[in-house]
Amino acid sequence: MLTTLLEVFHRNNQHLQVHNILSDNQFGFRKELSTFNAVYKLTDSVLKSWNNKLHVGGIFCDLAKEFVCVNH
Image (cartoon, rainbow, N blue to C red):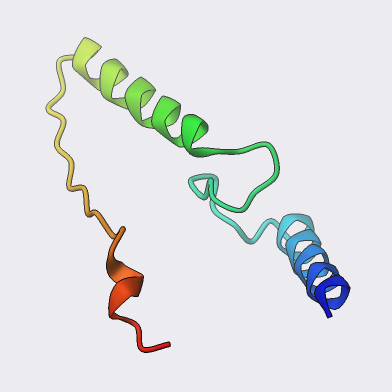
């Protein structure tokens, strides 16, 4: 069964990449992209905006306990 799940994951993942469905801002569950890449992109964007004398704002939500509320 695990092999079947991995096959489904790989086929779906390949479909998403071939048809360019995922946003460039999607870092999770993508090959060679990680939270490091997301943090780097955010930091780079903020620093470039500051250098151009622009205002920067952000809203951050911590969803770490989100799934504790789900009835399993």
